[in-house]
Length: 174
Image 1 (spheres, one colour):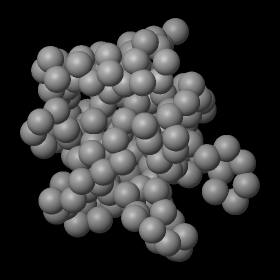
Image 2 (cartoon, rainbow, N blue to C red):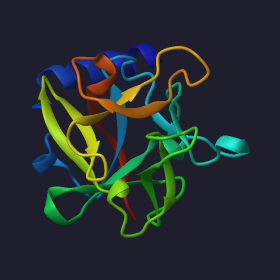
Image 3 (cartoon, one colour):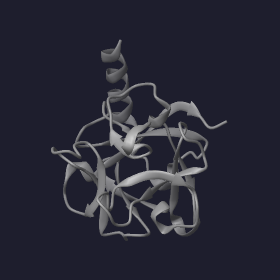
Image 4 (cartoon, rainbow, N blue to C red):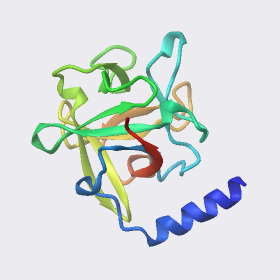
């Protein structure tokens, strides 16, 4: 069954036009996948423990932490929230400390770390950066070590972990 789903999804991705910021349906949830790990490892929210509300790439599943809503903000920026934590918890960036530049969900407020830029990167991929750190710092994925599969902002470069795909889901915002 999973094979058939991936086959159908692959066919749709080949025929679909790249999803750019102007094509985002704000009434739909999306999965955020990287070119690095592919569609079977979307961005998810950690539930509980000392990393509660931090994010990581996790195996694909029907988990509300993998359903992301994109809401327009001023200046062409976007706020990212999940079905799991709701519209009042926004994706933000740690400023300092051991998790500096790593994203986590926190109550939505007027913080530039919660304002995300979505920049087309070609072939249906986008780059994600924040107003806080600027367009030269892109969301990437740690490869190995204690932070394996966890995202962080780092200098933009030609790394597959910095190429994100916004995959529309069949889930709609209530």
